[in-house]
Image (cartoon, rainbow, N blue to C red; front, side, top):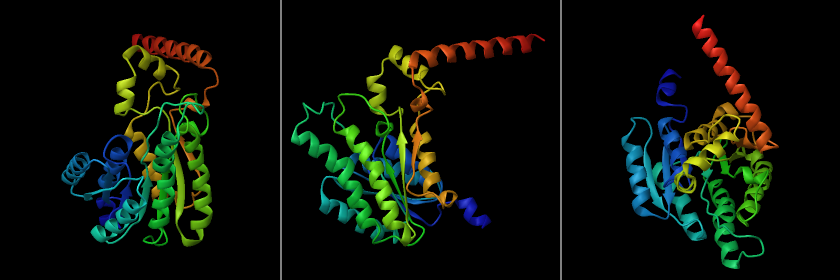
Length: 282
């Protein structure tokens, strides 16, 4: 037991993370490698995928990382990816369905191409990966689906992305019922604002401050924040958790009125600063 703990709680396990050549997916892959797992990194870009796998394999003496190219819109690629995972590492213990794309389109303006691009990548691939994964998983296996806070509240101009994210939560519940008797758990993680490449590009400093201000924790999240939650749900610490959807959004979804919260938060922080000043002067 002590040796296993020293090597990490996922020592000896194989984890497949789709869409893991950058952003949240790369952060999730990194967390599992650090906790001792052998991780299959996958995506469409060979250069990015091999760079991530090489960096992860070389940064720790715990887990290993291997890249397998796959397009999540291609059912044949998905089936081949699951076969390759077990051919490389012999087992599959955890599947993290993370691959995702979006279009900035309204329901009225979205085209069939937009629909197929998002639905096939963000939704159909989750089902197909799970479908093929269970052929290789034994009791104790875990599937974690990556959704979004858009599954709970959303904004215009992100269709069909926001509809699909709600659908992922429904898929999780359906799979949890069907796979539970096989000893496989299925859960969803629903991130909010997360510091990835797209976020950095889209948020100028003044707007970033506004976005951070409407979060009770006073910041946007990081891939590591999401990765920690994914690792928890995949671990034995969550052995009695299945069919759940867990928000990881710094409390953003709990806020009803932004201006009311911001005014309250500013007052609290001002009082705290005054109290610290008074205590330091005593």
